[in-house]
Image 1 (tube, rainbow, N blue to C red):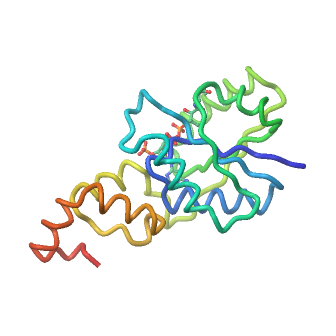
Image 2: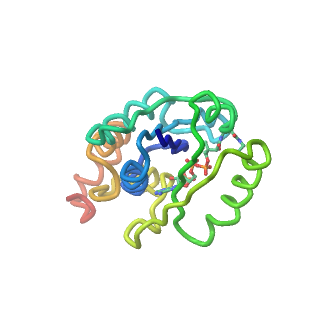
Length: 173
Ligand code: COA
């Protein structure tokens, strides 16, 4: 049984994350999407909501489950008997930070390998903060996030969307 953990804050999960999770699910037998508390990042959505959205967005993948965690990734990997971590790599800017985290995790647990799945060009520019910013201004999210996330963001930023519609924004699809 080859088990991998796909960790992240997922605030919220984007189409880029779903792409990484889907591709991981084709390689590994069991994929655990681990939604971190990431308190320091002061997330827009609470952990429960982020977990729910991840579950809805990945429901079609039979070997994927979603859990929440708060603590060290290496401890989570040990608890779940996972020897692989899968992360998405979008651009060169991601590399330095990912390199640091991977090296640290490797020092903490030599049995834990980190694998990177490169984002396709269409998701290279995508990030949760860009999605949050677009939503806060009532922008169209179609294609950037799963439908459940779009619904949640439109509800959260309902005033911005109402304003954008009133002004006939070209962003509204
Ligand atoms: N598609 C779209 N966006 C992606 C992406 C992809 N494939 N891959 C990463 N991102 C984006 C996220 O959307 C997020 O964007 P934002 O900053 O604009 O919101 C950004 O990359 C960072 O993602 P995040 O999920 O916060 O991951 P991270 O790389 O900061 O790591 C944890 C988060 C939870 C994996 C990490 O903090 C961790 O392991 N925590 C546990 C504590 C621990 O063990 N610490 C020591 C580790 S060295």
